[in-house]
Image (tube, rainbow, N blue to C red; front, side, top):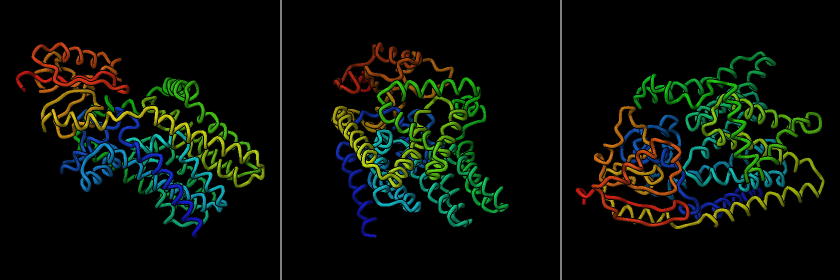
Amino acid sequence: MKKDIFIICISCALLLLIEVPLLTDSRPITSDEPWYTNPAYNFSQGQLIHNTNVGSGGDSNFMFPLIQGILFTIFGYSIFLARFASVLAGLFSIVALFKILKQLALPNRAVGFGLFALLAIPIYHSIFRYARPESWALLFVLIALLFLIKYLHVSSNKNIFIAGMFCALGFLTHPFTLSVSMAIGFVVLFQFIKNKKVLPLIAFAIPIIISGAIFILNFFYLLGHSRTYVLLKRVNSINTDIFDGIGKNIMLILNSYVLDKNAIYFLPLMFLLVFGLFLKKSNKRAFNSSLMGCFVFCTSLVLFSSSGFDMLMPYVLVFSIFNIAFIIASTRSKFIFVAISTYLILLLAANIYYDIKKFEPMNSLLARELEAIVPENAKIIGPVEFWMFLPKTQFKATIYRWPQEVDFRQLPLEFDYFLLFSRDRHNKNRYINKINDTLRQYSGSKLIYETYSKNYGKIELFAKISSL
């Protein structure tokens, strides 16, 4: 027991050490962070979990904004706290992964390697430091897998019901967890065929059906989205043209993981996943893990569109982490032990180096200086990332879901302040370019603040002369 507590405490301390000190400023704000944090802030102000800076997004699968919103209600809003919500998920994920590996009766050295892999692999390092839902979605996936394993060890309907409940929570956090739920569902279905017991199947399905009903209730009635909206705006989440979608997903994987710096960790971990399929006789646990991981990957390849498909990988590569633990548990080779140790240490070092390289105290600076200039409730338009600095304003992002009939030439008349920055990540969008050009050329405004950032480029704040 003391060794177990020691392993968990050391792992949690290491996570806090590598994530917390530079949490606010180690990375620039990504466009997805305010999509989720805005509904959370609105919730902390006594409103529904509803997106107002873009118009929608982050509020239909609402669990992560709910968690952030609770933290904001207790401690107040800050960029640090918005991101610390993901660090919390990382701490809980350490405990969940520990419980899984112990449930599988692995020795402490294998458990330690599994936990260290979770901390060292770059994609997990990223999701535990950004204000995005993948951190909590991963946690719910791990807990669902834990209770699936418990169910396979002791055929209790309670265990499989809890697994279904956390699959449901995972879906209400991020829709990509559906592929993991399907993998678990097929395991339960196989057990039904084998044992002729239907109750476990029902127990697993009930929470998932309820979560679907909650999603529909929230989406159509609380958020007020019409069926037309669903068809037009949500079509990008599911592949409607299967072959075209698979092709786009494969190209995204090639560009983002195989032909990118991410190949350093992606290719070895995918090799481990595929390699496990050939270990059915010698290491059945690794085979089963690889089978589920490959199922999750292939199902997602068919089911989901390329929009955000790269963020599926945390739910796939977790099975590679299991395989690392299985290999360490079964091998006596010092070479394999040293090779995996060195590889994981190098990955962790690369994460820290990248954080230091990207570090710039600009997020903290902008949060202070822009808040001092722009009054509360002022009407302001700018890049969605900058909402994180001005949550108390009536902020609309340039990527706002404008009505089709909007006249972009009239937009300056609706706002008191215009924020622009040269490294606009969305400048491939012709509507964004139109808006930026219109704001920049508006003669009734005056430049009142200007600075430069290595991460954001040139930042300019214009005020309408009538608002000064």
